[in-house]
Length: 476
Image (cartoon, rainbow, N blue to C red; front, side, top):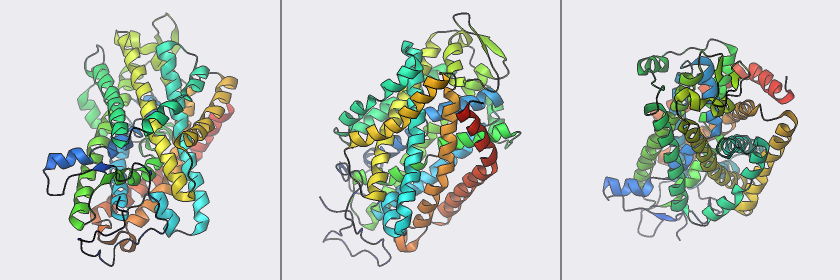
């Protein structure tokens, strides 16, 4: 295998401005690095597209994980289409940042954690790693809760035991990682397709769910934030949509493609990975928008609903909307299939996102700290850090605050974002680090504009977010 940083003997010397050779010599996701062959850059468009298609599939599932469900359901139920523009804005910013992350990996042959390890002061390594780990644990919390709720919907397993059962997915992930990158991408693509089909059926085929596309279009271009509660949910949506851990993971995933390192091949890899990102994150946007729209159709403006078993569900500011969806989707939509479809999609969402979380954890640990442990052990540690406090919380407080915990986890993710975004943009903007592949004017403006917008949201909503987060923790 040719090391990424070696120059083939029949290729011209790299320009002096090219990124320096890695001192460590380590590669991201060892065993998957350079494992997928791609055709020559002169091959047909579709041959190349098929070869490069995949990394953004894995990235996209982080943008439609159970954390998105909690924030989008709450946003649609409380504010109808009022936060649809936030979903669109967050998705657009995610596309810009992931395009930049892919470009970084292709141009430097490193992931973001490796770049930070090599090019930033030593004292930054441990804090940066801990911040990245906190983001992964927060994301894992949402996946644990989402999976537990889905199991409750499908099999009536209590939420507490559902949380415990989700820890067993370590065994599934261990078997998947031994099958190679293409198999992992295929499994995740199947799960994403499951989510998409479920929502297509719920919105366009099932009765009583006919959205007003004119009203939705107006909401997409009406930038309005009418209350602190909207700000809090908006920050949660951004935290659920733009995910810090996949900014670390994506540069590693693109290195699974074994392409030549001459200028034209690198240019081709950047182009097709950009298409990959735009296509897959556009699908993620449509699914997130569908979740919010479904909640708006089913819940907005209602004070209570009678569930299938005759139970009356009261709606207020403290309603657990994921739990309410479980109880009320079937009678409101006129078919029991709606609740099952919702649960299947939620379970697929959590399982696909947990695969991505495992790989991201491996990348940040090895990149920042140069610690190498078995993927199953890495997953077990991360999952335990999410499961144990969740199980204790639910054991003490009961299972009526699942949505609050999920939204809280997304606020934590939003507050972690600047610690991933700004190093990414700083390095990708550098001629010294990126050479001729540094960001052009469009991505410079789009990337830094996205980072500053997200950070502004964070600072604007921080006092209220901390207040409401504390209410969730103490149960007030």
